[in-house]
Length: 204
Image 1 (cartoon, helix red, strand yellow):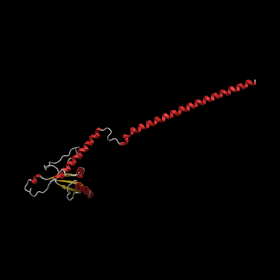
Image 2 (cartoon, helix red, strand yellow):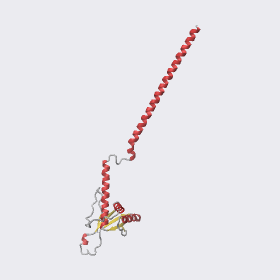
Image 3 (spheres, helix red, strand yellow):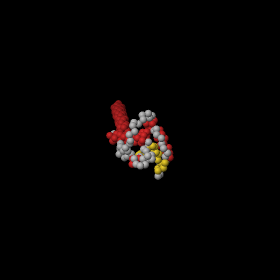
Image 4 (cartoon, rainbow, N blue to C red):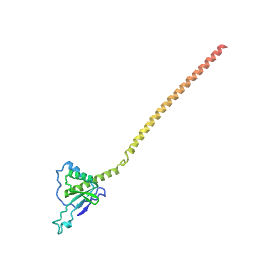
């Protein structure tokens, strides 16, 4: 058999192996199954396909290997999660096994392969669209705190202007009070001098 790992290094592109034509996919899947199949695209894994040379050779009758998806995991807990998702997607997970230091969860059948590759393509297309939108949005990628800075600066400026206006009013009020106080003191002083001059004249 030959390993065929989908190439997802190029944004928006998944190179799938040549799949045989098996007619239309069934349409009776539920919305839960469709959601689970889309989530399959986020799982690490690769596709294995039959060896055409062996299938068409002398041992073709005894050659039983078919299409399969092999999901990879690092622990039995991950294998359990993968098996639950595969089952929710409407497929039957086979018995997992170790390959080197890696756990493998195989899922046999061309339908599983098609669903996995379609999910990977959908995921890549979504990520490519998100990247494109981020490049065209001048505010994209700016931390939320930084985005709020213009509003904060404007609010601080308005507060400073208001404080300055209040200070100006208070200063003007204080100045006017000082002028009135000086005028009253001057009038009082003039009245006092006039009174003293009048008393002096009468005494003479």
